[in-house]
Image (cartoon, rainbow over all chains, first blue to last red; front, top):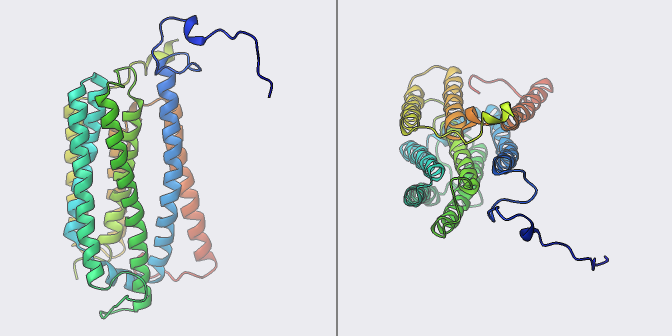
Length: 231
Length: 107
């Protein structure tokens, strides 16, 4: 590569008014924000396909070994699953309020709502830990220690638990990543990095967080409530 | 440009708006649990998925602001659902068509 020796005019000297967050290749902040938003949605498209694979596998084996899936499902803590649904939905609302605060430029409100969202995310994981611990104690983790004494074929009940741990586990990983991102947003907000014109990181994290909520909205009835609790 | 103006200055939804959606989501969660206690046969699954889909639409349209987003964002969201449906339905038809799948009482 040849290094140009010509004197390239330094961009920042050329035009005086433009904040550091405004990237040069965008006409204005509106265009930049729309592009950032579109990029986030495209990323979420890949996330939909990623979780879609789990749901597809789950649906096929569930229809193949329906009785085993029902038996396995009856050992999940429906109350805790439902409680966590409420926790995640609430965290979605607090996140929506954080984005709203960013739109209005209210720094203290952004910080407050992000902290509440972070706490709710932590609460979700604590409940998840209680559930996982219970499965561990009852030898319901797929593997050589798996023990099934109830009705149904242990091998295919184990398959249900395989799906349960993969799907909720992968969802849990998303929650953990989300908590890390919230902490990053808290730091950036505290550093006054965001303005009413530039808050795309908060808005796009909001999209991610709502997506995590969406996945759980489908996981809860499919894993915890199958086969009817009416028996 | 005229069409540019419609999403200039992003839509800011009211607090009441969010709280209404929040309440609806909680009610629908209660409905999902409630329906699970009633024996509807195959329709238990249909109902569970229908309620989850309504909840998903509320989250996507209002929390994720898709209702107020530019059309290229709506296209991206529609594409996600479209491709997911391709994957789910064609694979399901393949399993059924090859006779690998018995259709049991519940699915």
